[in-house]
Length: 156
Image (tube, rainbow, N blue to C red; front, side, top):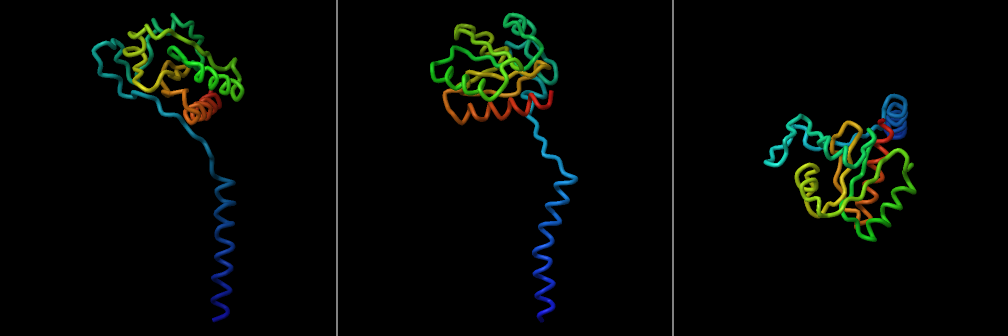
């Protein structure tokens, strides 16, 4: 009876350590950010039917997109600008383009970037794919943006 207890206790101690060592040696902790609209978009105002959906060149040329990840924010409030400053403290500002646009560009807002309330900020990767929508008025969304930017920048 004592021998069976000793074997069970040994297994209870050794098995988690063995699993941890195995995962540490052979596992990878890599994350990815989903591409929005992988099957294209079905909208009246969008002419681009590529799969996955890519932001039109007319929009990217107008914001002087430099083939690197970009954050486009429509009419940011003071709180959103403060939260973006926190983003730039965490992320190297030279790796990401940030653009502020007036709210009257509804054609871009609704059709090209497909932004819906409550989001006002969109993340575009270097391949012109939409990678996320954010409401930077909240701290949680700002933190989510920081994490997703770090993942995106590590991948490139």
